[in-house]
Length: 328
Image (cartoon, rainbow, N blue to C red; front, side, top):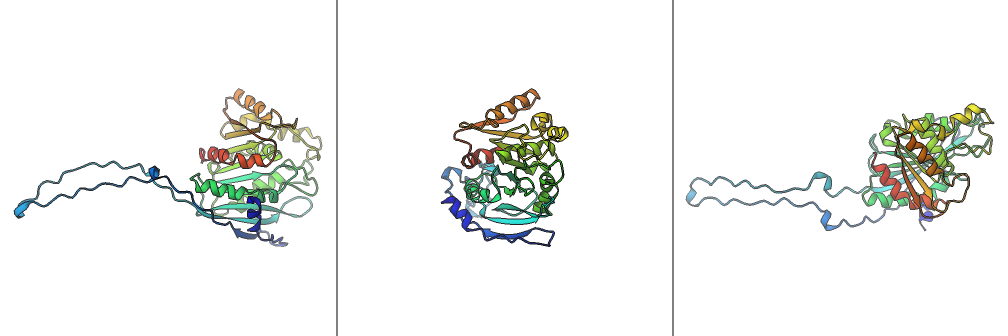
């Protein structure tokens, strides 16, 4: 039901042909009922005491000064965001095939600004941006933000390419796939526009192959991403489609477990599926955490119930959102 609702509000995508800027189609999410705020969360009213005038028109008594306790401003009833919107965009990919690449954007119902955080979400393989949009992630986030979690934008690009579909979210050694360059040099500027974020308001999050990509991009571009979340990811090269063409320089550059010190200034969350059975991924979160601890870092680790499915992402969305809120 949730996935169907999310799909229903998205109109067909405009492919676009010649324009350099993204083509766009947008739709509004159905408003969700806002949860009632408990009475204890209401701000305490300030009590006032009237001072009676003196009898006979004589001099008025000195007013009695009373101190009334007020709740700190931070505990006032938060302003809830309105309904968000979902959009699909396309723009040139920069790949050797000359095609355009699509990406999906969820924006919460709050004003756009440089202080509104952005999460760049990388899907797994096989998958694409439509798998993310149809998962119900947007409505899951609507519910979280309505409950008081700090809202953020989510951008989910397509991580596939016709020259090589299993891209690992990198640039290929032969230059035919430019996915890393697309994200860093095209996607981030196009999405953020005049409201460019600093690294403190930008995170990269990924699932499975996207978990590898999130860690790889986050460690290679710490100037862009202040937070990294890898959900059921792995941290060594897995290259079935020959992105690196066995080039040792490419392999070294795209091995997160060889660049652990680069994460020293970033907040990192590792989420592992308790029922993980893929030998590429089993134990990887724990292995990376040991490497990070040896480098003097303290990444957070969550071993979550369930198997290696996108349901893990939805189930852990509250954990991820609250972790990110600690760094915004």
